[in-house]
Structure formats: structure tokens, C-alpha cells
Amino acid sequence: MGKIKYMLERITHMNYGNMFKTIDKIHNITNKNKFSIFCDVIYTGLKYGAGYVDYYQFQMYKMNDSEKATIITRGVNNSIMKKYNNQSEIYKFEDKVTFNKLFNKYLNRDWIYLKEASIDDFKKYLNGKDYVIVKPLDLSCGKGVDKINVKNVNVNDLYNKLIESGQTLVEDVAKQNKILDDIYPYSVNTLRVVTLNYKVVTAYLRIGNNKNVVDNFNHGGMVTVIDVDTGMINYPAIDKDTNVYQEHPMTHKKIVGVKIPMWDDVKKMCEEAAHVVPSVKYVAWDVCLGPDKPCLIEGNDFPGHDLYQLPVHRKGNTGLLPRFKKAMEENEK
Image (tube, rainbow, N blue to C red; front, side, top):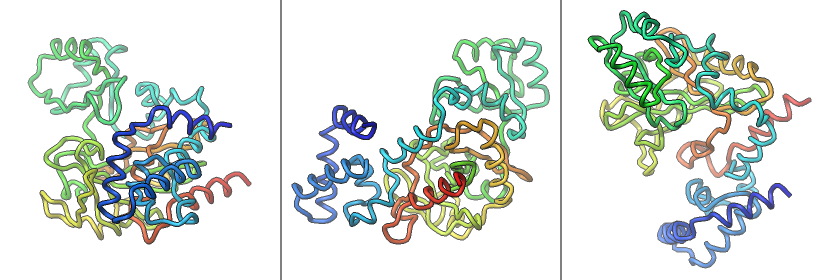
């Protein structure tokens, strides 16, 4: 019943104009008949929970049924989230201040919440700092996040300005490891580490571009997959426009062949953090790799599946669902 309800909601709210534009793109790539593509999009959506974006992005038009069944589609991802994440507990991840309090042990940097701090508290916090990161509590995907020079700032004016703008969570700038800083120094290039049932099941490196101060894939950044067992980057990075990068276009530093430092420490930290709120079992952790230890940035209780199993990051047409199922089965015995 839940799957039928989900599909009816998707059909009702679908952007049919964009769907037919996507079918045109697939036709131009494959030269397949547009009606047959349309029929397969509908069939794949009904059977595997794939939207037309999934169908295009994961190149499901190249797959047979057994291969499609391995893909974590939007519908599959949604069902995993509903099964493993207690909805009454997810506020502990969505409220940034609550998150920082609960996971303070893993942040490895100082922070202050202005609505619970006086101007004097803020002055003490800023003492000796050159830059800080300010965040709003009600936005996501890097929106409203700013890096501010506070070396010679009027603290009273800044305090009032941040309260007024809603950017009330202030954190130290996370310093990143030299290996990642050399690849792209304008943003913190974060690791996206996904745990399911307290086990790391997949991981990615997000890298900024074009002098943007955020590395978000949906805001001009790029992404590549990290081998969960070794910490190696064996595949090129790709951006939202499907440009593929063996090396960074600005620094010309190689991406393929990089080994993520302290990878075992990253996995250990994320799997340990996964037990802090045990009723939320499917989490995407954003991690800054510091000079000598990993630092937790945030946890996402509804991991986006758009970074998963991109064609440039996989061998053949096999998706991640078998690996996810193994984690589910192993931890539920």
C-alpha cells in the first residue's frame, strides 16, 4: 500500500514537461523510439521506484530487469529511510544546534549558538580568531552559510547582524588536510560517508570548483566515489552537468589515485556516531578531514541518493542495493 501511495504522489506531482525533455535527450543518445523510451520510463518507475531523473542519471535505459533491480532509486531510497529512521527522532539531525550538542565529541572544533549566548560570550569566542563560519538553522544544501573575517570586526554590530539574518550558529573554520587542500583550496572538500544499520556502506569525496566556498554537488561542485575498504579514489569526479575530471581543472592536481588519509579513523568515527541516536539508522555524515583527525560537520537523516552509483563510478550496470541489503541482513541477525 505504501509503495502504491508513493507512486500516486509522484505521478500527481511530476513535471511532465521535463520528463518529455529527458526522453528527448535519451532519444538523441540512443536513437531509440521515443514511445518505447516513454513506456520503459513508466514501467521502470512502477516496478523499481525510479523517477525519470533516475532513469536518465543512472542510465537505466541501458539496463535489463536484473540490473535495474540493483539500483537505489528515489523510491527505494525513500523506503529505506522510512524503515530505518524513527520520524520522532530525526529532529536531532535536522536541528543544527541539537545536533552539535549531541555530537560535540566528534566535531573537533569550537562553536557557539548566539541565541543562547551574550555579546560578552561572543567576544570571548571570537578572541584570537581570523575567520568563522556562520549558518542559519532553517536552510540546507549550503544555503546561507558564509565565511566571515572577524579579525577587526565590531563584535556588537556583527552579533546584531547575525541575529537579524538568522545565521545564529557560529563555528570555527574547519581546517582540511593538505592532500585535499592541494586539490582545491577555496572550500572545505568534505567526505560524504553513509551508514546503514551502523555500518559504512558507501562514501564520496565532494570537491568545490570555480572558486566557490562550498563543495556541494548541486551548487557547482563535483563528486567522486571512495572505495569503502581501502579509502582509494579509483574513479574520476563528475559534476552536475556530467563533466568528468581526472584532475581538478583549476589546480591540475590528480583526483584519480588519491588515497584518503586516516580513512580507518573516518569509518570508525562515523560508525561510532551512528550509535548516538540508535533509532535513526540510515545517515549520511559530512566529514571534514582535518590535518591530523576527522571532524564531523553534520549528519543527514534523509541521505540523498543522487550521488549513488553514477555510471562513471561503477563497473557495468550494477548498483548499490546488494551492498545495502547485505548491511541490513548482517546487522539484523
